[in-house]
Image (cartoon, rainbow, N blue to C red; front, side, top):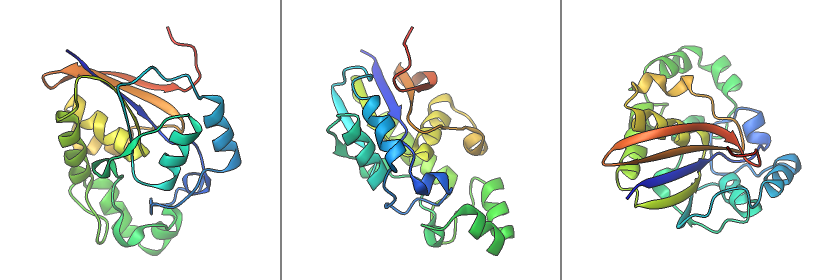
Length: 191
Protein backbone atom coordinates (compact mmCIF):
# COMPACT_ATOMS: atom_id res chain seq x y z
CA UNK A 1 0.00 0.00 0.00
CA UNK A 2 1.06 3.59 -0.59
CA UNK A 3 1.92 6.25 1.96
CA UNK A 4 0.36 9.60 1.15
CA UNK A 5 1.62 12.67 2.97
CA UNK A 6 -0.03 16.06 2.72
CA UNK A 7 2.37 18.66 4.14
CA UNK A 8 0.47 21.85 4.96
CA UNK A 9 2.42 25.04 5.61
CA UNK A 10 1.04 27.35 8.31
CA UNK A 11 -1.02 30.44 7.61
CA UNK A 12 0.64 33.84 7.77
CA UNK A 13 1.49 35.67 10.96
CA UNK A 14 3.77 38.54 11.97
CA UNK A 15 6.84 36.30 12.49
CA UNK A 16 6.50 34.83 8.99
CA UNK A 17 5.89 38.27 7.43
CA UNK A 18 8.99 39.64 9.18
CA UNK A 19 11.14 36.62 8.20
CA UNK A 20 11.95 35.86 11.84
CA UNK A 21 13.79 32.70 12.75
CA UNK A 22 11.42 30.18 14.32
CA UNK A 23 11.29 30.34 18.12
CA UNK A 24 8.09 28.38 18.80
CA UNK A 25 6.03 31.52 19.40
CA UNK A 26 4.44 33.72 16.78
CA UNK A 27 0.70 33.42 16.50
CA UNK A 28 -1.23 33.76 13.28
CA UNK A 29 -2.50 37.23 12.53
CA UNK A 30 -6.20 37.78 11.86
CA UNK A 31 -5.74 37.60 8.07
CA UNK A 32 -3.89 34.29 8.34
CA UNK A 33 -6.41 32.83 10.79
CA UNK A 34 -9.33 33.90 8.58
CA UNK A 35 -7.74 32.33 5.49
CA UNK A 36 -7.14 29.09 7.38
CA UNK A 37 -10.74 29.01 8.64
CA UNK A 38 -11.95 29.60 5.06
CA UNK A 39 -9.89 26.61 3.89
CA UNK A 40 -11.34 24.26 6.53
CA UNK A 41 -12.75 21.12 4.95
CA UNK A 42 -10.65 21.35 1.77
CA UNK A 43 -8.06 18.75 2.75
CA UNK A 44 -8.57 15.10 1.90
CA UNK A 45 -9.68 12.69 4.61
CA UNK A 46 -6.67 11.39 6.53
CA UNK A 47 -5.98 8.38 8.72
CA UNK A 48 -3.81 10.57 10.96
CA UNK A 49 -2.93 14.22 11.55
CA UNK A 50 0.40 15.39 12.95
CA UNK A 51 1.46 18.92 13.80
CA UNK A 52 4.87 20.53 14.04
CA UNK A 53 5.59 22.02 17.48
CA UNK A 54 4.99 25.73 17.61
CA UNK A 55 2.07 28.06 17.98
CA UNK A 56 1.39 28.91 14.33
CA UNK A 57 1.21 25.27 13.23
CA UNK A 58 -1.11 24.37 16.10
CA UNK A 59 -3.29 27.44 15.39
CA UNK A 60 -3.38 26.66 11.66
CA UNK A 61 -4.42 23.06 12.33
CA UNK A 62 -7.14 24.24 14.71
CA UNK A 63 -8.42 26.82 12.20
CA UNK A 64 -8.52 24.11 9.53
CA UNK A 65 -10.60 21.95 11.87
CA UNK A 66 -7.81 19.39 12.34
CA UNK A 67 -6.95 17.66 15.58
CA UNK A 68 -3.51 16.22 15.53
CA UNK A 69 -0.65 14.92 17.59
CA UNK A 70 2.43 17.12 18.00
CA UNK A 71 5.44 15.46 16.36
CA UNK A 72 8.71 16.76 17.83
CA UNK A 73 10.71 15.25 14.95
CA UNK A 74 8.88 17.65 12.61
CA UNK A 75 10.21 20.76 14.35
CA UNK A 76 11.71 23.29 11.96
CA UNK A 77 15.40 23.97 11.60
CA UNK A 78 16.85 25.08 14.95
CA UNK A 79 18.44 28.51 14.41
CA UNK A 80 20.25 28.45 17.75
CA UNK A 81 21.00 31.91 19.14
CA UNK A 82 19.30 33.52 16.12
CA UNK A 83 15.89 32.21 17.29
CA UNK A 84 13.20 34.90 17.33
CA UNK A 85 15.34 37.46 15.49
CA UNK A 86 14.60 38.79 12.00
CA UNK A 87 16.85 37.58 9.19
CA UNK A 88 17.52 41.22 8.22
CA UNK A 89 18.64 42.01 11.78
CA UNK A 90 20.96 39.01 12.00
CA UNK A 91 22.25 39.65 8.48
CA UNK A 92 23.16 43.23 9.38
CA UNK A 93 24.94 42.17 12.59
CA UNK A 94 26.55 38.92 11.34
CA UNK A 95 26.66 39.19 7.55
CA UNK A 96 29.52 36.71 7.07
CA UNK A 97 28.01 34.11 9.40
CA UNK A 98 24.62 34.30 7.65
CA UNK A 99 26.23 34.10 4.21
CA UNK A 100 28.22 30.99 5.20
CA UNK A 101 25.13 29.41 6.78
CA UNK A 102 23.03 30.00 3.65
CA UNK A 103 25.78 28.72 1.32
CA UNK A 104 26.89 25.62 3.21
CA UNK A 105 24.25 22.98 4.13
CA UNK A 106 26.69 21.52 6.67
CA UNK A 107 27.08 24.82 8.55
CA UNK A 108 24.78 25.21 11.56
CA UNK A 109 23.54 28.53 12.89
CA UNK A 110 25.41 29.31 16.15
CA UNK A 111 24.09 26.77 18.66
CA UNK A 112 21.61 25.36 16.15
CA UNK A 113 21.42 22.66 13.50
CA UNK A 114 22.49 22.55 9.88
CA UNK A 115 20.28 22.17 6.84
CA UNK A 116 21.74 18.70 6.29
CA UNK A 117 20.79 17.74 9.87
CA UNK A 118 17.18 18.91 9.52
CA UNK A 119 16.90 17.11 6.16
CA UNK A 120 18.18 13.91 7.78
CA UNK A 121 15.82 14.25 10.76
CA UNK A 122 12.77 14.81 8.56
CA UNK A 123 14.00 12.06 6.23
CA UNK A 124 14.00 9.56 9.10
CA UNK A 125 10.39 10.52 9.81
CA UNK A 126 9.50 10.05 6.12
CA UNK A 127 11.13 6.63 6.08
CA UNK A 128 8.85 5.56 8.91
CA UNK A 129 5.68 7.06 7.35
CA UNK A 130 2.81 4.62 7.76
CA UNK A 131 0.63 3.47 4.90
CA UNK A 132 -2.46 5.49 4.17
CA UNK A 133 -2.88 9.27 4.24
CA UNK A 134 -1.25 11.55 6.81
CA UNK A 135 -1.87 15.28 6.98
CA UNK A 136 0.99 17.17 8.63
CA UNK A 137 0.79 20.88 9.45
CA UNK A 138 4.46 21.84 9.47
CA UNK A 139 6.77 24.82 9.13
CA UNK A 140 8.10 25.66 5.63
CA UNK A 141 11.56 24.33 6.53
CA UNK A 142 10.05 20.91 7.20
CA UNK A 143 8.33 20.91 3.81
CA UNK A 144 11.65 21.83 2.17
CA UNK A 145 13.51 19.11 4.08
CA UNK A 146 10.89 16.50 3.16
CA UNK A 147 11.09 17.38 -0.54
CA UNK A 148 14.91 17.36 -0.51
CA UNK A 149 14.93 13.93 1.12
CA UNK A 150 12.08 12.41 -0.89
CA UNK A 151 13.55 13.39 -4.25
CA UNK A 152 17.17 12.73 -3.30
CA UNK A 153 18.11 16.35 -4.00
CA UNK A 154 21.38 17.78 -2.76
CA UNK A 155 20.97 19.52 0.61
CA UNK A 156 22.04 22.76 -1.09
CA UNK A 157 18.67 22.82 -2.89
CA UNK A 158 16.91 23.43 0.45
CA UNK A 159 16.97 27.25 0.23
CA UNK A 160 15.87 27.18 -3.40
CA UNK A 161 12.45 25.74 -2.57
CA UNK A 162 9.75 28.32 -1.83
CA UNK A 163 6.88 27.22 0.38
CA UNK A 164 4.07 29.79 0.44
CA UNK A 165 1.81 30.04 3.48
CA UNK A 166 -1.24 27.80 3.64
CA UNK A 167 -0.33 25.48 0.78
CA UNK A 168 -0.34 21.71 0.54
CA UNK A 169 2.64 19.80 -0.81
CA UNK A 170 1.84 16.15 -1.42
CA UNK A 171 4.20 13.18 -1.36
CA UNK A 172 3.09 9.69 -2.23
CA UNK A 173 5.09 6.54 -2.50
CA UNK A 174 6.21 3.20 -1.20
CA UNK A 175 9.53 1.48 -0.57
CA UNK A 176 11.41 4.78 -0.48
CA UNK A 177 10.26 5.97 -3.91
CA UNK A 178 8.31 9.20 -3.67
CA UNK A 179 6.27 11.26 -6.12
CA UNK A 180 5.68 14.96 -5.52
CA UNK A 181 2.80 17.34 -6.07
CA UNK A 182 3.90 20.87 -5.19
CA UNK A 183 2.23 23.73 -3.32
CA UNK A 184 -1.48 23.58 -3.99
CA UNK A 185 -3.18 26.54 -2.26
CA UNK A 186 -5.73 25.25 0.23
CA UNK A 187 -9.26 25.78 -0.99
CA UNK A 188 -8.18 25.65 -4.66
CA UNK A 189 -10.11 23.38 -6.96
CA UNK A 190 -8.57 19.94 -7.34
CA UNK A 191 -8.26 18.21 -10.67
